[in-house]
Image 1 (cartoon, helix red, strand yellow):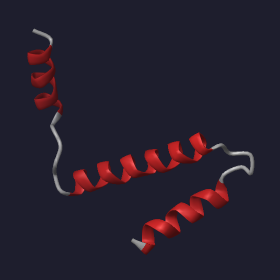
Image 2 (spheres, helix red, strand yellow):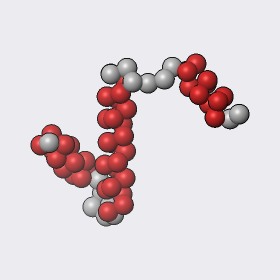
Image 3 (cartoon, helix red, strand yellow):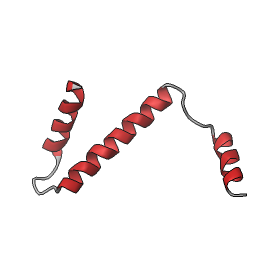
Length: 61
């Protein structure tokens, strides 16, 4: 958990002084989603291009 806190502190230090709460929350959210996606890729939890096309074809029927 400490690692996440350090990441957020580092992120805040890089942001402009006039950043709003929304700006800060957006940056944290985006970083969280990127990390989750990277973790899913490393755990092979994803769809191939062909699988995704098949799913979309079913949705669009």
